[in-house]
Image (cartoon, rainbow, N blue to C red; front, side):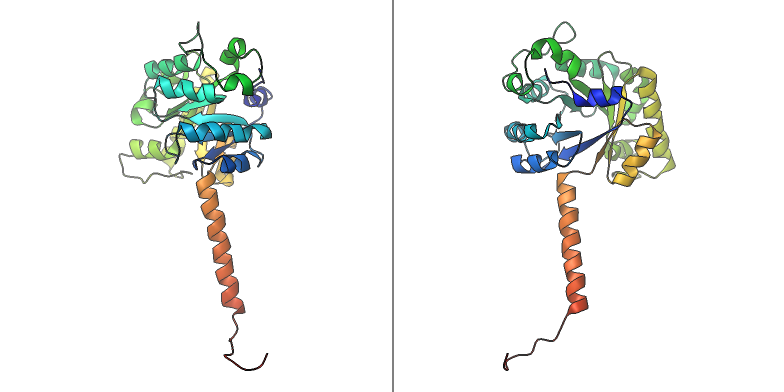
Length: 270
């Protein structure tokens, strides 16, 4: 089986950068995968896509050598196992609030005797190379998302779940929940209370020997997060990056036209 490069980089003490795909299109996924990310996650939860879009997106990403991952819609065995069979080397599961839920999630990612994943790697048996059945348990990643007050209350127990590889922080939902709606959802939190919670998550992950990951809005904030102790950061995503680049291009055009505008003479000889 082709080794999971994320695990290799972390073993070397290096941080990793994750890309994010919310647009259900293979060409978009191919473009994102070719930009130098260590991994790219297909967002099946909030993205404008479903399994029928995610499978060709993973196929399009294969040539780049990037590690393919998926965020599933919920803690549900069918979609978790199906995304793994499609080729995901890691699964991010939202709204994990208890250690029991974390253990349930892990069981869907691992084959027996460490879990209850059903065997049928239809596409990944070709994409991941030989010996998949015997090596998948060691190579695949299970990331639980901490996004609620309940999740924070059970943080230490969740982090200590056997077989869990990491905690992925969704700052928008986490802020929404912890602040009771007092603070708007969003990335790159600057409130002291939220930064304290992020450091709590890092400490819990380090105590349990697992990885901490954070979704960020900008490279600058992602670099700060790595300095705090996060092992993986995601910076923005395809839809936001597309909007930002297009918006910047349009704004620059408007500025140039306004600055260089000339009077157009109607008629006359040229």
